[in-house]
Amino acid sequence: MLSEVELKRLRWICTHRAQLEMDVLLGNFLDKHFSNLSPEQATAFAELAELQDIELWPLVTGKRECKNPVQAQVISMLRKVRPE
Image 1 (cartoon, rainbow, N blue to C red):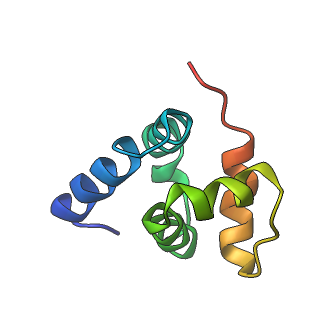
Image 2 (cartoon, rainbow, N blue to C red):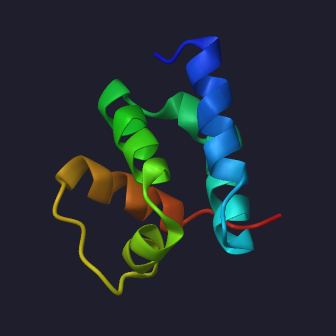
């Protein structure tokens, strides 16, 4: 489980992206689904959030395959998030 400081940092990373679509996607996922992730999935999400948009967007859109199986699970979940 993340400390309060780590969670605040993750929230900032998720909502201050270069691409507005990624702000919305990662921010919504963090708010609505992060607390339900397993510890491994939470770590994978944090690792994905650290990627630059140019690296992450192709994974989310399916233009590039994710080799890490836990990250692939999280990406699959991200694909199901609908903007509000």
